[in-house]
Amino acid sequence: EALGDNGAATLVRVLKEIPSNVPILLDVKRGDIGSTAAAYAEACYEHCKADAVTLSPLMGWDSVAPFVTEKYSSKGAFLLCKTSNPGSNELLALNLADGETVFERIAKLSQEWSIKSGGASLGLVVGATDAVALAKARKAAGEGVWILAPGVGAQGGDLEDACSAGLNEKG
Image (cartoon, rainbow, N blue to C red; front, top):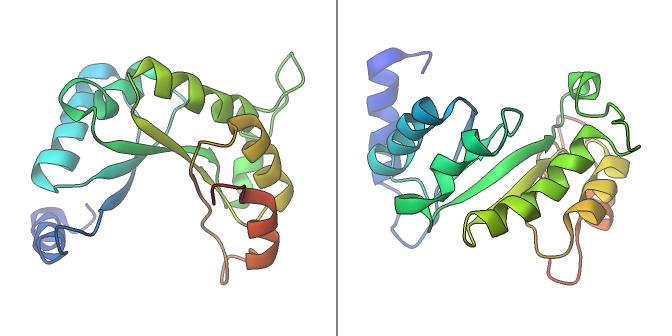
């Protein structure tokens, strides 16, 4: 996007080179009101041919639904849950009135929203840089939710710690 039309054209050209049997996860971190979210979903799925996207769930179900319901019910999304950047603690690690954190609530919502969507695949983005949060998100999300855990390596996340915290019997 920072490169304007040329950047968008380059992205589409690169995506066209990916074999059709390789799923495309577009890391767009979208989250907006319903009508705008629907336009973003169209851009991601129709123009970029993505199979799944990353989304910010902070505006609620109506900002996620256009990406995983109706004509996009076969698509997937990963909800930003507890991201790998240090600043994520300013909001996502806050405790709610019932004692759970914002990121634990997001993890629980991933299950509820998957059911609400009619069975769409909603996963979570939980940074590998915080193994404690990763374990809590895994517990809150349950066994059937996929977790994308960026941040191993240059961002400081430890692969073994992240795997211990985030993996379950299903992977």
